[in-house]
Length: 507
Image (cartoon, rainbow, N blue to C red; front, top):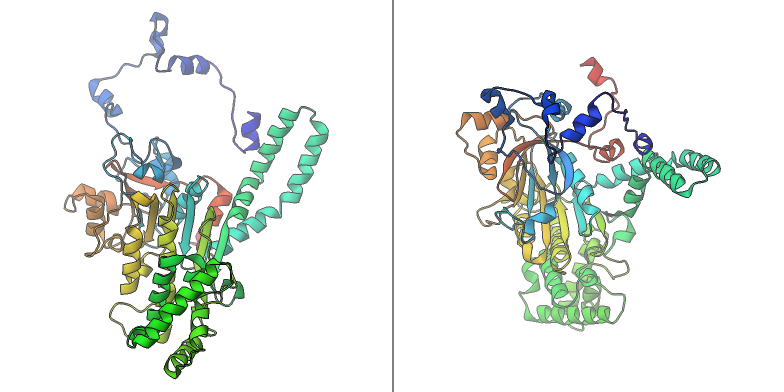
């Protein structure tokens, strides 16, 4: 009771026959003649309502608690707290079970996860909660945040919590004076640290935040292929991004292409020997060519790169790249402007494509380089990739890095349609389908449910904020309601803010 009190949980002592009843209700206990008053008589029609031998379990047998199974078809009108209170069945989720062997009942081994739903449906909250929970395990976690909003919110929460730490330290000093027993003292200090959210502060400080904003000179070269890749992989991506920059000019003349290939190899070898060089050095060397044609074109390329977002990819290797070895990384991307399929590309669109190429390959190599190391890539705003042909190609390549490489891709997007295409049949082993207005048919088909049964349609369309249909790797489908358990951590997941504090009261 003392330990629970430190965590803010109230416990009251049992009374009357509660201890005895609790003891007798254990599954191995026998009822005797003297226990006859604990036997509850009922009709068969009432007995079958207990749903014995009927499982409504969904998710994982062992995993993190995320909420409860909603056994109803009700429309909770956004009151997910009431939906939680109305369900006795928790649901747990551990994504790493999806590609592990010898798990009874699992239908497939696809490790990929799809989280789909309208803006405001609760999918972003759930995705970030899933990211935090799984990131504390041994796998490496990478969260791609195209809006670059997570860093500022997580750090704001950390700064606010840290402002209360001096008060906590004063209380700890008082405990040290009052309590002589080391074991009791350690327990009370631990309880105090939990009440002040010290573990959350430590967790946020453990995250490696990266914002790919070229205005910060520390980010120059963050996605330079010669910096974060080696050998043939570096050559492949260096060629790809260069072709994205100058198009057919790379290959229309053998002299230029041969010189480029030669200089790329020279720079990669120099990097391997410890020299501070990057992809920009390739064109600096070409600009020294005695052949005017090669020199002028290399100088033109250098002029296109200078002072633009392309410096994220073309650098002199003076900064380290985005790390593939950090335990937890949140990678924010700013300033991208991608052209939609079929649109004429502007110079800004072409530069954004190059950044996307480099970012996509970074994610691919992050997931594929060590088959014995679980890696998870959380790709937020997945629709962003499907608006362009280049984005679709990158997403397809990332999805195909899967089970054999121990890589999990979590695609977070507004529609289940973003999770598949005619060119790619890579399936998601786990799907969380939050409400998609006007897209019932596609959502039910993605889950594997008939789209012409009135009760199923009602079951889906009655969902409101915080509810989702879950299809797990065991083929089970259920409606779940998401629950955040820690108020301070929930604050990290906020995405909307307002100065109109009394709006709810006025409404």
